[in-house]
Image (tube, rainbow over the protein chains, first blue to last red):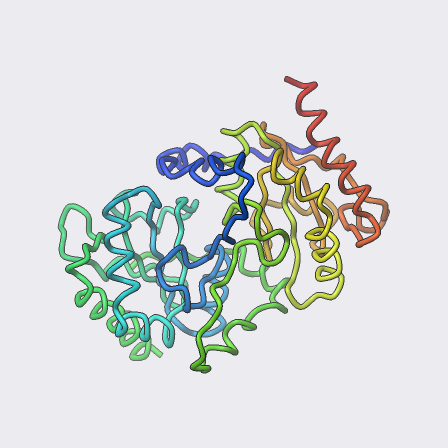
Length: 169
Length: 169
Protein backbone atom coordinates (compact mmCIF):
# COMPACT_ATOMS: atom_id res chain seq x y z
CA UNK A 1 0.00 0.00 0.00
CA UNK A 2 1.16 3.49 -0.79
CA UNK A 3 0.33 6.57 1.20
CA UNK A 4 -1.28 9.19 -0.99
CA UNK A 5 -2.06 11.96 1.48
CA UNK A 6 -2.97 15.27 -0.11
CA UNK A 7 -2.34 18.36 1.94
CA UNK A 8 -4.83 20.04 -0.33
CA UNK A 9 -7.58 18.48 1.73
CA UNK A 10 -7.14 21.17 4.32
CA UNK A 11 -7.82 23.76 1.67
CA UNK A 12 -10.76 21.84 0.38
CA UNK A 13 -12.39 21.81 3.76
CA UNK A 14 -13.03 25.50 3.22
CA UNK A 15 -15.55 24.77 0.50
CA UNK A 16 -17.18 21.77 2.07
CA UNK A 17 -20.59 23.29 2.67
CA UNK A 18 -21.97 21.85 -0.54
CA UNK A 19 -20.74 18.42 0.42
CA UNK A 20 -23.01 15.56 1.13
CA UNK A 21 -25.97 17.05 -0.65
CA UNK A 22 -26.12 14.26 -3.22
CA UNK A 23 -25.43 11.67 -0.55
CA UNK A 24 -28.63 12.52 1.21
CA UNK A 25 -30.44 11.00 -1.72
CA UNK A 26 -28.55 7.74 -1.44
CA UNK A 27 -31.24 6.03 0.55
CA UNK A 28 -34.05 6.94 -1.80
CA UNK A 29 -35.31 4.34 -4.20
CA UNK A 30 -36.77 6.50 -6.98
CA UNK A 31 -34.85 6.85 -10.22
CA UNK A 32 -32.23 9.55 -10.05
CA UNK A 33 -31.63 12.08 -12.78
CA UNK A 34 -28.06 11.79 -14.11
CA UNK A 35 -25.75 14.50 -12.77
CA UNK A 36 -24.57 16.94 -15.41
CA UNK A 37 -21.18 18.53 -15.83
CA UNK A 38 -22.85 21.87 -16.56
CA UNK A 39 -24.54 21.98 -13.13
CA UNK A 40 -27.00 24.45 -14.63
CA UNK A 41 -24.47 26.96 -16.02
CA UNK A 42 -25.38 26.06 -19.60
CA UNK A 43 -26.56 22.54 -20.41
CA UNK A 44 -25.73 22.92 -24.09
CA UNK A 45 -22.15 24.04 -23.54
CA UNK A 46 -19.17 21.68 -23.56
CA UNK A 47 -17.71 21.50 -20.04
CA UNK A 48 -14.34 20.14 -19.03
CA UNK A 49 -14.45 17.80 -16.03
CA UNK A 50 -11.21 18.70 -14.27
CA UNK A 51 -8.75 21.59 -14.17
CA UNK A 52 -6.04 19.42 -15.75
CA UNK A 53 -8.35 18.52 -18.63
CA UNK A 54 -9.37 22.17 -19.07
CA UNK A 55 -5.75 23.39 -19.16
CA UNK A 56 -4.86 20.75 -21.71
CA UNK A 57 -7.81 21.68 -23.93
CA UNK A 58 -7.03 25.38 -23.62
CA UNK A 59 -3.46 24.83 -24.68
CA UNK A 60 -4.26 22.53 -27.58
CA UNK A 61 -7.25 24.49 -28.89
CA UNK A 62 -5.65 27.90 -28.25
CA UNK A 63 -8.84 29.10 -26.58
CA UNK A 64 -8.89 30.89 -23.22
CA UNK A 65 -10.22 28.94 -20.24
CA UNK A 66 -12.99 30.30 -18.05
CA UNK A 67 -13.09 28.82 -14.56
CA UNK A 68 -16.20 29.30 -12.45
CA UNK A 69 -15.85 28.50 -8.75
CA UNK A 70 -19.23 28.14 -7.09
CA UNK A 71 -21.24 26.20 -4.54
CA UNK A 72 -24.58 24.52 -5.06
CA UNK A 73 -26.04 25.76 -1.77
CA UNK A 74 -24.85 29.36 -2.14
CA UNK A 75 -27.61 31.84 -3.07
CA UNK A 76 -25.11 34.25 -4.68
CA UNK A 77 -23.78 31.41 -6.86
CA UNK A 78 -27.31 30.37 -7.81
CA UNK A 79 -28.33 33.90 -8.73
CA UNK A 80 -25.25 34.39 -10.92
CA UNK A 81 -25.76 30.96 -12.47
CA UNK A 82 -29.28 31.84 -13.51
CA UNK A 83 -28.19 35.11 -15.13
CA UNK A 84 -25.25 33.32 -16.78
CA UNK A 85 -27.43 30.54 -18.21
CA UNK A 86 -30.11 32.96 -19.42
CA UNK A 87 -27.82 35.31 -21.31
CA UNK A 88 -27.85 34.21 -24.94
CA UNK A 89 -24.97 36.53 -25.79
CA UNK A 90 -22.82 35.11 -23.01
CA UNK A 91 -23.71 31.50 -23.80
CA UNK A 92 -22.87 31.98 -27.49
CA UNK A 93 -19.54 33.60 -26.68
CA UNK A 94 -18.74 30.86 -24.16
CA UNK A 95 -19.66 28.15 -26.63
CA UNK A 96 -17.63 29.50 -29.50
CA UNK A 97 -14.51 30.89 -27.93
CA UNK A 98 -13.87 29.38 -24.50
CA UNK A 99 -12.87 26.20 -22.76
CA UNK A 100 -15.27 25.98 -19.81
CA UNK A 101 -14.95 24.57 -16.33
CA UNK A 102 -17.18 24.93 -13.31
CA UNK A 103 -15.96 23.61 -9.98
CA UNK A 104 -17.53 23.23 -6.56
CA UNK A 105 -14.19 22.20 -5.07
CA UNK A 106 -11.06 24.33 -5.03
CA UNK A 107 -8.07 23.10 -7.01
CA UNK A 108 -4.58 22.85 -5.61
CA UNK A 109 -3.42 25.72 -7.88
CA UNK A 110 -3.09 28.81 -5.69
CA UNK A 111 -3.02 31.00 -8.81
CA UNK A 112 -6.75 30.47 -9.05
CA UNK A 113 -7.26 32.31 -5.76
CA UNK A 114 -5.25 35.55 -6.15
CA UNK A 115 -7.30 37.29 -3.46
CA UNK A 116 -8.65 34.33 -1.56
CA UNK A 117 -11.14 31.53 -1.91
CA UNK A 118 -14.73 32.69 -2.15
CA UNK A 119 -17.71 31.93 -4.35
CA UNK A 120 -18.88 32.75 -6.84
CA UNK A 121 -15.73 33.86 -8.59
CA UNK A 122 -14.61 33.64 -12.20
CA UNK A 123 -11.03 33.52 -13.47
CA UNK A 124 -9.64 33.38 -16.95
CA UNK A 125 -6.57 31.41 -17.97
CA UNK A 126 -5.05 31.97 -21.37
CA UNK A 127 -3.72 29.18 -23.58
CA UNK A 128 -0.16 29.89 -22.45
CA UNK A 129 -1.47 28.71 -19.03
CA UNK A 130 -1.23 32.18 -17.55
CA UNK A 131 -3.94 33.00 -15.02
CA UNK A 132 -5.35 36.38 -16.09
CA UNK A 133 -5.38 38.00 -12.65
CA UNK A 134 -5.76 41.35 -14.46
CA UNK A 135 -9.30 40.58 -15.60
CA UNK A 136 -11.46 41.57 -12.66
CA UNK A 137 -15.03 42.46 -11.75
CA UNK A 138 -16.21 45.61 -10.00
CA UNK A 139 -15.74 44.72 -6.32
CA UNK A 140 -12.45 45.79 -4.80
CA UNK A 141 -12.73 43.41 -1.84
CA UNK A 142 -13.47 40.40 -4.07
CA UNK A 143 -11.86 41.09 -7.40
CA UNK A 144 -13.18 38.04 -9.23
CA UNK A 145 -16.75 38.09 -7.93
CA UNK A 146 -19.70 38.89 -10.18
CA UNK A 147 -23.35 39.54 -9.39
CA UNK A 148 -26.31 38.87 -11.70
CA UNK A 149 -26.33 42.57 -12.64
CA UNK A 150 -22.71 42.25 -13.83
CA UNK A 151 -23.37 40.03 -16.85
CA UNK A 152 -22.47 42.83 -19.28
CA UNK A 153 -19.17 43.36 -17.49
CA UNK A 154 -18.54 39.64 -17.57
CA UNK A 155 -19.20 39.53 -21.32
CA UNK A 156 -16.85 42.47 -21.73
CA UNK A 157 -14.20 40.62 -19.69
CA UNK A 158 -14.68 37.53 -21.86
CA UNK A 159 -14.04 39.67 -24.93
CA UNK A 160 -10.97 41.06 -23.19
CA UNK A 161 -9.70 37.54 -22.52
CA UNK A 162 -10.19 36.74 -26.20
CA UNK A 163 -8.75 39.96 -27.59
CA UNK A 164 -5.56 40.12 -25.58
CA UNK A 165 -4.88 36.53 -26.48
CA UNK A 166 -5.08 37.31 -30.19
CA UNK A 167 -2.96 40.44 -30.01
CA UNK A 168 -0.26 38.51 -28.17
CA UNK A 169 0.04 35.89 -30.86
CA UNK B 1 -0.37 38.06 -14.60
CA UNK B 2 0.78 34.95 -12.83
CA UNK B 3 2.32 31.96 -14.53
CA UNK B 4 0.42 28.81 -13.70
CA UNK B 5 2.28 26.22 -15.71
CA UNK B 6 1.50 22.63 -14.79
CA UNK B 7 4.12 20.07 -15.54
CA UNK B 8 1.30 17.55 -15.36
CA UNK B 9 0.37 18.51 -18.89
CA UNK B 10 3.14 16.33 -20.21
CA UNK B 11 1.63 13.37 -18.43
CA UNK B 12 -1.83 14.26 -19.64
CA UNK B 13 -0.71 14.22 -23.23
CA UNK B 14 -0.45 10.46 -22.87
CA UNK B 15 -4.21 10.16 -22.60
CA UNK B 16 -5.17 12.76 -25.14
CA UNK B 17 -6.72 10.47 -27.71
CA UNK B 18 -10.21 11.12 -26.39
CA UNK B 19 -9.65 14.83 -26.64
CA UNK B 20 -11.57 17.06 -28.94
CA UNK B 21 -14.40 14.65 -29.46
CA UNK B 22 -16.94 17.02 -27.93
CA UNK B 23 -15.35 19.95 -29.75
CA UNK B 24 -16.20 18.45 -33.10
CA UNK B 25 -19.83 19.10 -32.26
CA UNK B 26 -19.20 22.77 -31.54
CA UNK B 27 -20.27 23.92 -34.94
CA UNK B 28 -23.55 22.04 -34.95
CA UNK B 29 -26.71 23.96 -34.28
CA UNK B 30 -29.00 21.22 -32.97
CA UNK B 31 -29.71 21.01 -29.26
CA UNK B 32 -27.03 19.14 -27.37
CA UNK B 33 -27.72 16.57 -24.70
CA UNK B 34 -26.18 17.67 -21.37
CA UNK B 35 -22.94 15.84 -20.57
CA UNK B 36 -23.17 13.54 -17.57
CA UNK B 37 -20.65 12.92 -14.83
CA UNK B 38 -21.39 9.20 -15.03
CA UNK B 39 -20.26 8.97 -18.68
CA UNK B 40 -22.33 5.79 -18.90
CA UNK B 41 -20.79 3.95 -15.92
CA UNK B 42 -24.03 4.20 -13.96
CA UNK B 43 -26.34 7.15 -14.52
CA UNK B 44 -28.09 6.65 -11.21
CA UNK B 45 -24.94 6.61 -9.13
CA UNK B 46 -23.50 9.67 -7.42
CA UNK B 47 -20.20 10.61 -9.09
CA UNK B 48 -17.53 12.94 -7.77
CA UNK B 49 -16.25 15.44 -10.32
CA UNK B 50 -12.59 15.66 -9.39
CA UNK B 51 -10.01 13.58 -7.50
CA UNK B 52 -9.76 16.23 -4.79
CA UNK B 53 -13.50 16.16 -4.29
CA UNK B 54 -13.53 12.36 -4.23
CA UNK B 55 -10.73 12.17 -1.63
CA UNK B 56 -12.50 14.69 0.55
CA UNK B 57 -15.78 12.78 0.35
CA UNK B 58 -14.03 9.48 1.06
CA UNK B 59 -12.39 10.87 4.15
CA UNK B 60 -15.48 12.57 5.52
CA UNK B 61 -17.91 9.75 4.72
CA UNK B 62 -15.47 7.00 5.70
CA UNK B 63 -16.26 5.14 2.48
CA UNK B 64 -13.58 3.76 0.14
CA UNK B 65 -13.07 5.55 -3.17
CA UNK B 66 -13.19 3.70 -6.46
CA UNK B 67 -11.34 5.45 -9.30
CA UNK B 68 -12.00 4.35 -12.86
CA UNK B 69 -9.52 5.56 -15.47
CA UNK B 70 -10.90 5.17 -18.98
CA UNK B 71 -11.14 6.72 -22.43
CA UNK B 72 -14.28 7.35 -24.42
CA UNK B 73 -12.80 6.08 -27.69
CA UNK B 74 -11.23 2.93 -26.23
CA UNK B 75 -13.10 -0.31 -27.06
CA UNK B 76 -11.75 -2.08 -23.95
CA UNK B 77 -13.03 0.77 -21.79
CA UNK B 78 -16.41 0.71 -23.52
CA UNK B 79 -16.79 -3.04 -23.10
CA UNK B 80 -15.94 -2.87 -19.40
CA UNK B 81 -18.27 0.11 -18.96
CA UNK B 82 -21.17 -1.80 -20.41
CA UNK B 83 -20.60 -4.79 -18.12
CA UNK B 84 -20.11 -2.43 -15.16
CA UNK B 85 -23.33 -0.53 -15.84
CA UNK B 86 -25.36 -3.69 -16.44
CA UNK B 87 -24.36 -5.51 -13.25
CA UNK B 88 -27.08 -4.80 -10.70
CA UNK B 89 -25.02 -6.31 -7.91
CA UNK B 90 -22.05 -4.09 -8.71
CA UNK B 91 -24.18 -0.97 -9.12
CA UNK B 92 -25.89 -1.57 -5.78
CA UNK B 93 -22.59 -2.10 -3.99
CA UNK B 94 -21.10 0.98 -5.64
CA UNK B 95 -24.13 3.06 -4.72
CA UNK B 96 -24.24 2.05 -1.10
CA UNK B 97 -20.65 1.73 -0.05
CA UNK B 98 -18.33 3.70 -2.36
CA UNK B 99 -17.34 7.17 -3.35
CA UNK B 100 -17.12 7.03 -7.13
CA UNK B 101 -14.98 8.82 -9.67
CA UNK B 102 -14.43 8.16 -13.35
CA UNK B 103 -11.73 10.10 -15.17
CA UNK B 104 -10.68 10.38 -18.79
CA UNK B 105 -7.62 12.43 -17.80
CA UNK B 106 -4.85 11.25 -15.53
CA UNK B 107 -4.40 13.03 -12.21
CA UNK B 108 -1.07 14.38 -10.98
CA UNK B 109 -1.00 11.71 -8.22
CA UNK B 110 1.50 9.07 -9.29
CA UNK B 111 0.09 6.69 -6.68
CA UNK B 112 -2.83 6.15 -9.03
CA UNK B 113 -0.52 4.58 -11.59
CA UNK B 114 1.51 2.00 -9.62
CA UNK B 115 2.33 0.03 -12.77
CA UNK B 116 1.85 2.68 -15.41
CA UNK B 117 -0.89 4.64 -17.10
CA UNK B 118 -3.24 2.54 -19.17
CA UNK B 119 -6.98 2.22 -19.59
CA UNK B 120 -9.23 0.86 -18.41
CA UNK B 121 -7.89 0.51 -14.89
CA UNK B 122 -9.56 0.65 -11.51
CA UNK B 123 -7.94 1.61 -8.24
CA UNK B 124 -9.30 1.79 -4.73
CA UNK B 125 -8.35 4.40 -2.15
CA UNK B 126 -9.37 3.95 1.44
CA UNK B 127 -10.66 6.77 3.65
CA UNK B 128 -7.24 7.18 5.23
CA UNK B 129 -6.20 8.27 1.71
CA UNK B 130 -4.12 5.18 1.15
CA UNK B 131 -4.12 3.91 -2.44
CA UNK B 132 -4.92 0.19 -2.20
CA UNK B 133 -2.23 -1.04 -4.59
CA UNK B 134 -2.79 -4.52 -3.12
CA UNK B 135 -6.23 -4.87 -4.70
CA UNK B 136 -5.53 -6.13 -8.19
CA UNK B 137 -7.18 -7.86 -11.13
CA UNK B 138 -5.99 -11.03 -12.85
CA UNK B 139 -3.45 -9.69 -15.36
CA UNK B 140 0.14 -9.64 -14.19
CA UNK B 141 1.27 -7.16 -16.83
CA UNK B 142 -1.54 -4.72 -16.03
CA UNK B 143 -2.43 -5.25 -12.40
CA UNK B 144 -5.39 -2.87 -12.27
CA UNK B 145 -7.02 -3.78 -15.59
CA UNK B 146 -10.35 -5.59 -15.78
CA UNK B 147 -12.21 -7.12 -18.68
CA UNK B 148 -15.99 -7.53 -18.99
CA UNK B 149 -15.63 -11.17 -17.87
CA UNK B 150 -13.97 -9.99 -14.64
CA UNK B 151 -17.03 -8.35 -13.10
CA UNK B 152 -17.26 -11.01 -10.38
CA UNK B 153 -13.62 -10.44 -9.47
CA UNK B 154 -14.24 -6.70 -9.43
CA UNK B 155 -17.21 -7.16 -7.08
CA UNK B 156 -15.04 -9.37 -4.90
CA UNK B 157 -12.35 -6.67 -4.87
CA UNK B 158 -14.93 -4.05 -3.93
CA UNK B 159 -15.96 -6.23 -1.00
CA UNK B 160 -12.28 -6.56 -0.09
CA UNK B 161 -11.89 -2.77 -0.15
CA UNK B 162 -14.90 -2.50 2.18
CA UNK B 163 -13.96 -5.32 4.52
CA UNK B 164 -10.35 -4.42 5.14
CA UNK B 165 -11.43 -0.91 5.87
CA UNK B 166 -13.87 -2.03 8.53
CA UNK B 167 -11.44 -4.47 10.17
CA UNK B 168 -8.84 -1.72 10.42
CA UNK B 169 -11.12 0.60 12.35
